[in-house]
Image 1 (spheres, protein in one colour):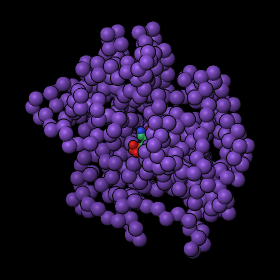
Image 2 (tube, rainbow, N blue to C red):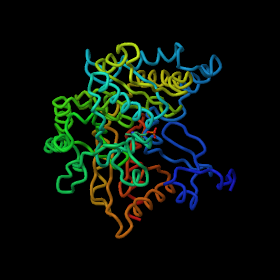
Image 3 (tube, rainbow, N blue to C red):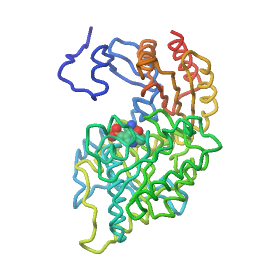
Image 4 (spheres, protein in one colour):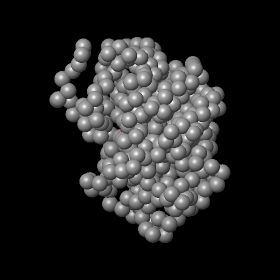
Length: 438
Ligand code: PMP
């Protein structure tokens, strides 16, 4: 085949490696809503790359901003010095930061990815607790079926057993259990009215371990990578209240939900529940340059930054924190989101999206359909004895037909770019329906 590369030396992400090399699929270019494969086929992007290309592919404005910045200054360290573009980007982010006016999380720490953002937020939480004399609070709580990247902090609080299996975890980390209990599995029923009390599972962990041992609780407002789990109404409010009652910091991992995915800039705003820290990446730069950012409220920021000399407990930062080219990409991305109204576009499209996705009801193997904002999860019945095999077959079939979907286990996830039009929803439904029938 033309352009066929040698496939032996490149070690891909472990879970993708074998399947990919058995049947290589190679993407060569991207524009707007579409990829083009190396053999020249056009493929509709149903996943915004990997939940990140919110403004669509090939945005010249971002490319030009990066090129301009690289030609002015390619790199500069963020230790003991700074560069204006990082401050400019932080200011722009502070303006749209998650949280209500007057209580926005408008203190921004730059990282290089979602995993780094998670580890950064967890470290900030631990350092904050120490700085206010709560040094016994070293335990971090996550949630089963939560995904928080692949750093040691992220896998410790993450709820994917396979990701944790062979590695040691941060001592004391534990997990809310309610997303796993099939009897109580309100999370797969599409933002149900009832089920807020599932948050009380945090009280169980407080009783078990003692509040004085718990530093923070981290959740994705809507879990993405583990199959689109949407919280029941009132659940996040209740989690916030329990955290407040026991002095536990609340962290929202908005690596997926940030930057317009739900129809508001952040899930924090969509749900009207304000955590202490918010982790982001992906849509921060439209996926064009790797970058992440952690948003903190003033309480957390000030306790750390105004600690007496010698008592700052947080020694942390990356070579690429505030990378000039990534900041340039980020500013250009925010300009596009603003100028094209993309932060709220999912709210406009939500109904049509919901309708399109729910039209798949009744197709072979479909057992649940859940949507929120411009996200959807389509759960398939497992093929006996081979969990995930059917969804993988559907993925391969869709790719052949010209549609990129994401599968995790037996769940198909969609998160099209926010520039999508209604006609694209029809194309997605039609290709997926054909694949399911086959
Ligand atoms: N948190 C969440 C909620 C994510 O969805 C992801 C990536 N899918 C991450 C963290 C990790 O981000 P990255 O892959 O950029 O490290």
